[in-house]
Amino acid sequence: VFIHENLDSNGATSTINYINNALEGTSKNVFYSENSTISPESLVVSFSGNTIEGAPITSLDESWNDVFVAEVNGIKYEKLSDAIAATTDYQTVNIIEDCTLDGSVDITKNITINGNGHTVTAKNAAFYIQADLQSFTVKDLTLKGELGNGETFGEGSTGPWMGIGTYNGNFGVGQLTLTDVTIDGFSYGLYFGMNPDGAATTLNTNPVSVEANNLTIQNCGIKGAYFEKLT
Image 1 (spheres, rainbow, N blue to C red):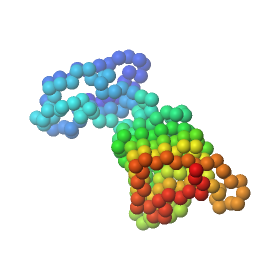
Image 2 (cartoon, one colour):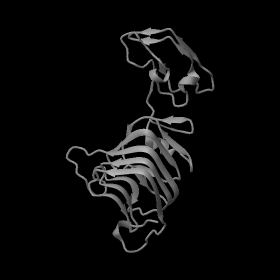
Image 3 (cartoon, rainbow, N blue to C red):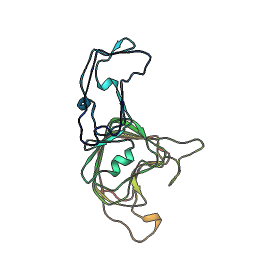
Image 4 (cartoon, rainbow, N blue to C red):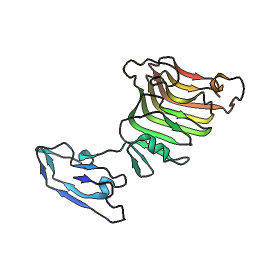
């Protein structure tokens, strides 16, 4: 059953009763959705007695597949970067599937990223803070750097060069909270500079304050954590 992205786009209500169906020669999923607002429970009001290749389907969630990796305020997104871009201050981005970033993700708002136990793979920087923030929280997430063919750890745009930080943007974060987070396989796990591009003037002295609980930083090519300012 394919759930189109425009289903219910005009406010109509559609529901399905899916009972006692036996599927053969198909995938493990009954439903495939490209609709970012309709939940399985709101669409499928009755679901029981169904089998795939003779095996019972024990739950609706078990047979539901979609293209989305993150959710903000009830809206799902196919890319984590789009979900983060859609936030306003103090909203939470819920990661709902493992995913790979197309490039570094700019963090410019005071938000929380809840990984819900998932892994985000990055081939560049992962979370690149590009503004002074009051708060930024990451929890229950693994950030995994992935080197491409022939790439080595290095500065700037070479491979997975930073897990979380400002690099030489040098912005401050009033409260950076990292809880149950693993940062694995970057040139720098954390990087918070103060000196823009090595210059001796125009320093950003806004502080960075870190609270870390069950934080693991490992397999980093240059430094696990680098701070030029820390409170």
